[in-house]
Image (cartoon, rainbow, N blue to C red):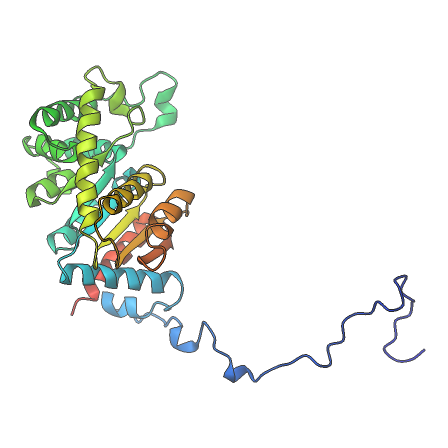
Length: 328
């Protein structure tokens, strides 16, 4: 038998043979453009390294590169006096990140906060008693889930007073909390933003949050104040034209939908909206944030969109560190 010839004969047609590889075109490896090279590799962290030195050791690849680019755009926005809007979900509060955001706010890197309804619940409870996030499994069976009196009363009283005074729900909540002598007000985003006069917009889906089934709940007031905040957020979105930033952190449905509607409202009214940055930070990349925040608003060269996957309690402190350590 001839060397290299199979021991058996194929059952296929005799003119069907494996493709000949002899004339495949190749090239020298060194001439090929590559996405990764050793200059981008991580470096070991030295004992006693500073935070800036630690950040410099991270690999300049994928999520780290995105993180650095987002941080650079945040710094650029501040230098251009353009808004940096932080859209957050309740998990951001529950993972203890309010102090990080409050510090960035004091340094001019938080121009506004947009929040879903769960943020109001968790932030208010932190301010009131220093704890939040009940055990749903343990309380749902007896119907006690979400029945804390102070939480529901505070939110609904704020909504009703805000409706009377023509305020948005976020400002009304900040005002209500700031009028109380609270032991943990310094850890509340609502209190911090109210003191700093940083806009805080709240966007509730009525029935989705625990305060909406309390005796004092008033759908008209909740709807009116939340609608006021939608209009206020839309004005803030209008202002990100020419270098602003919108960050979506931990909201998989409500805020991506709100942001998309704000974008279309701004453009419907004939305002320019280009050269801005959006980013989604979450531990999974869901459809709506990727579509409504990262891709659609920035399409056709209108802006830059990033998605960074990771747990908030890790990624947001890293983002904050990248922002601050990149200061000149």
